[in-house]
Image 1 (cartoon, rainbow, N blue to C red):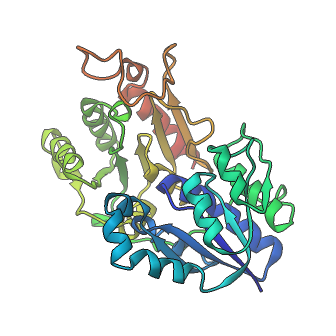
Image 2: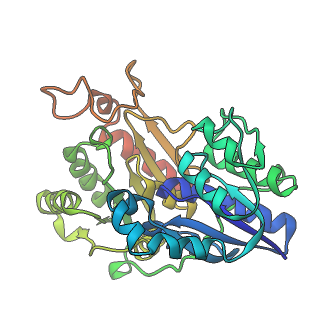
Length: 343
C-alpha cells in the first residue's frame, strides 16, 4: 500500500482541480491511499473522492487573525501532532505557495512539489526534496496531473480526466426540469449584471425550466430574492435554503444545467459532469476555467478583457463593467440551448 499526503489547502476551485490526479494515480498504481491537508472550510471536498482515507483540517486563514491565541491555546501544537503522526511514502505539495511548502516541510515523508520555474511563489521550491518542473502554459488540472505522475512514477497521458466524485443525486422540486444559477462570486468585477440574470430567467422559464438560486452570504441572498420577486413567473424561481457544500453539490448534480460566473462552484459543476455555461468578463478560462465535458466558456471580445482586475476602471457611471456588453442574456440562452440539445 502506497500512502500519500496531498497538500492543497485552498481555494475551492484549486482543490477540485486536484481530484483527477488522484483518479489517475489510483488507476495506474492500484494499491494507493491518500490523506489530504486542507483548509477547514473546504474539508468536505476531498471526502468526495473514494481514494481519500483521512482529511487533516488546517486553519491558516483563521490562525492569521488569532496568532497569539492559536499559539497559547495549543491548537497549532495539536495540529502538528496530527500531521506528524504518520510517515508517508510521498508528500505532494500541489499548491506551490510558501504557506503550503512550510506545511510540506513539517510533514513526514519524501517531499515533492513544483520547482522554482513552475511554482507561483518560486521560494517554495526550496522546501522540497524533489522539486518537479511542470510547464506553466497548460490548464491547472493538467499541471497537477503531471505533478502527481512525475512524483509517483507513472504515465498519465492515456488516462481520461476523471474527477470521480461520489455525490448522491436528489430529485429537484416537483420532479421538474431545472437550471441552477451560480450568481455569486468574490470580485466586484466578476458579477454578471443583476438585470441580465432576470432577463435570462424569463427566457429559461419560457423553455419549461425552473430556476434554482443558491446563496452563501447576505448579498447573494438579497440578489436571489430580487431575481425571484421581479420575475413575472416567480413561482418557477426557487430561492434555495442556505446549504453546505455537500448539499449544494447534490443540488447541482440533480439539475439539468448550470449558468455560472467565474466562481469556485462552477468548477464543482464541471467536476460533476454537469452542462455548464461559464461567463468570463474580466477573467479568462484559459488556464483556470471550468474543465471537462459539456462546458461552454463565454468571453468578452473587448480589447481591455481580460484585465484580471477586481474593480473595473471603465465602469464609472455605467451599470456594469462594459466587458459584459458582449455577453448578453440572448447569447447565454443560445449557448444553453445548444449545450442541452448536444447533451
